[in-house]
Length: 140
Image 1: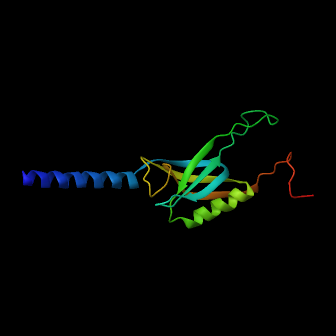
Image 2: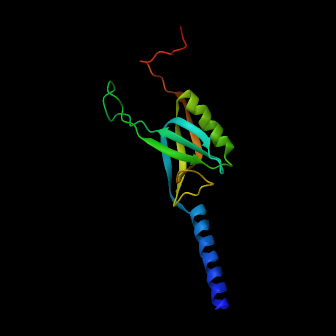
């Protein structure tokens, strides 16, 4: 009986370790999404993660004078990627359009982020959005 419990315990540890390694490293998909970063923040009590939102702004879907359709893409930034977080923070303040290269994981782990989408690279357009119909509230 003791031998059975030891073997079962070892098997459970191996299966759990394999599952966690698979979830941590395996990619379900990868791609690029473009839009305007509307939110970037660090949150968490036990595990600090960087989370953001990208407004995809479906241009051309409706008339210019109407409200444009928008979809929000939620993503996470791996904690060791401080440079990516800084770039995302900068573009969220300028309103420039960016392209986010991301990978999608099979599951989320609490120490990696709140989403299954992880940004690996940011391409800046260097063109802040110019909203012609809106006045700057600080220019008097």
